[in-house]
Image (tube, rainbow, N blue to C red; front, side, top):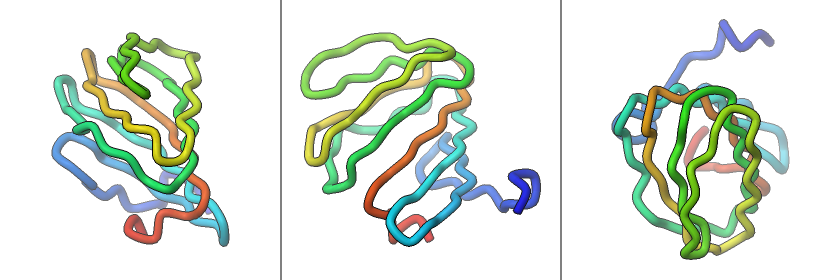
Length: 103
């Protein structure tokens, strides 16, 4: 498969993702609009976020930082997290187990 051939889905306002699903993981490539927010939430999935481009303010477990191109954040299972795109962003997330609701 080629990423250019995957249909993008707007999962929440301003978050456009291309999803790749394996049996036990989901890999998402996000194009995020400036000022788009993801409300604080938690889920059973372990998550790793990689900032490919832009500036993304992100709170994990009550600690807020601004992440930039090249930064990687590990979000353990069930830890509250949320954020906001300070600029247009390109993010990459890996979730395990797979995000069934993204299929």
